[in-house]
Image 1: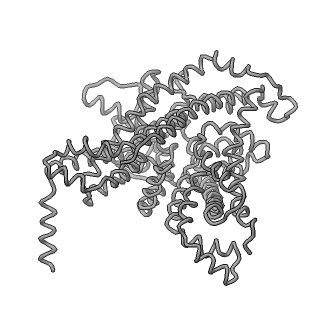
Image 2: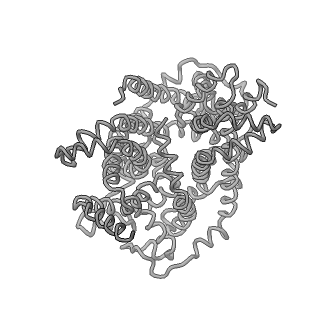
Image 3: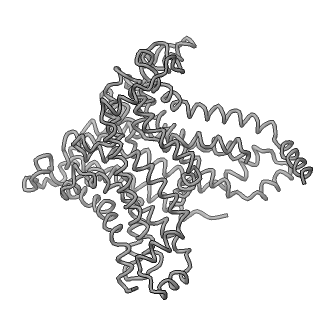
Amino acid sequence: MKTRLTGYAFITPAMLLLITFGVLPIAVAMVVSLTDMNLAGLGDWSRIRFIGADNYTALFADRAFWQAMGNTALFAVVGVPAVVGLSLLIALGLNSSQGRFFRALRSFYFVPAITAIVAVALVWGYLFNTQFGLFNHLLSLVGLPPVPWLSDPVVVKFSVVWVAVWRGIGLNVIILLAALQGVPKEYLEAASIDGASRARQTFSIVLPLLRFALFFVTITTIIAWLQFFDEPFVLTKGGPLGASTSISLFLYQKGFSASQFGYASAGSVVLFVIIAVVTVVQLRARRADVDY
Amino acid sequence: MSTTDSTRRRHTRRRVRPGTVVLGAILAVGAVLTAFPFLWMIFGSLKPRSESVAYPPQLLPQEPTFEFFVELFTKLDFGRYLVNTLLIVAICMVGLLLMAAAGYGFAKFSFPGRDVLFFLVLVTMMIPGQVTMIPSYLILNGLDLTNTLIGIALPMLVSGFSVFLFRQFMTTIPDEVIEAARMDGAGEWRIFLRIVLPMSGPILAVQVVLTFIAGWNSFLWPLIIANDQRLYTLSVGLSLLNQQIATNPALQMAASTLMVVPILIVFVVFQRYIVQGFALSGLK
């Protein structure tokens, strides 16, 4: 029988889960970040002390934190243009023909996005290996010296970004392809009758119409790179000497390896604020966006 | 009939421009390069150990062997990891049903506070996962759920986006259908399970496939929550092999193949739904 309560009955289980693991954690992080909670405090809550903003002061004085911030910024600066640019080029290319061959090619670009990161990391680790890896062998074939892919503090940053770019393209190609399907054919036909070249059509019609999709893809990619975690975690554990440690990985290490939950929570709050700022900018800009 | 067909075909043939052919070739090379690590993995899994660490490396195994696939299940505990992974996928499917129910509640019922609660759902879509990692662990620890399969699965059940998609789709189901069933005396849960869910087939299919992939690949929560090796999933078992990179790449490639090939099969069969699901995430 339908009563007023039926609606609540349908939403309650999911809402409880969503609130417990979607909203509540932010509040928990804020409270715990003001305490000295560690492994002892985890077992016995009476041993947790309130220490005010000490965790934040310590965090901003922590060189490892700034190294992780710097790495994350570098990852984002290299990774975001690479992912967005390559996704756009591939999507434009794939969209240029609706033939069966082009449709089949799509699948190849999607697959890395849905395969398990651990398996992917093992395969790339094998390719990167300096003793019997394929990449250094290929370099030697063209007369280049071997590269210490994962052991050099500078090279390692680009190695993990490379794997993440490879994995990150598929999702964005799909989103951009969906947006490209929405470009009215009449516009392109009219332009082509007027004698506009293919390149001209792309720059003057397709890209402006794709503006919103590109903007969306860029923002979500930035947010994803600010949370960058999987690739360095499984490929390098953040090493050598923290050279590939991202903020998320720094938080993981402080929280789960060092059991400094208060300290790590303070870091989580800082990361949350950064991502919240990016998200607000996105929402603002979307509201200002005019539709054609 | 056949003549018009063949003229039309000749017509489309003629429209393939030389530029398209060049583009096709470039994209094909890119596609092969993208897929190459997977080829390397599959061939690597069939090599005997001596070949897998040989320099220079060869693409194709000279004396193919399945010994490492056997080893995964005999000497190592991958059978158990496989069962755990499938259990987690099953729990995630129950979670999906809860999300569908919530989507239905938001789409077809009006009750005080509905809009506020739905706004909360939208808010959770924007809260980043890495930020909630540590507090979620503390919550699970407070609930005494560490080292349990439920504890591993709970944080992964959450998806504001799923609720959102279900709600959007279910709003389009006509009220008359639901009212008619109510007139016939069907209970509310029966209406949901027998009428609303089957009518939501397309969106349900997308979500089931994506949930399977996410559950199968799940790594972080099993790693954090499971201290006991008996609760490890395939991903966690695989990451243990990671420490042995110098010793036996062929075994690692076999384990990786075991993880990746089922997903490749799911992808080939359900490609349409996966692509649709990804494209929908652009709606966010």
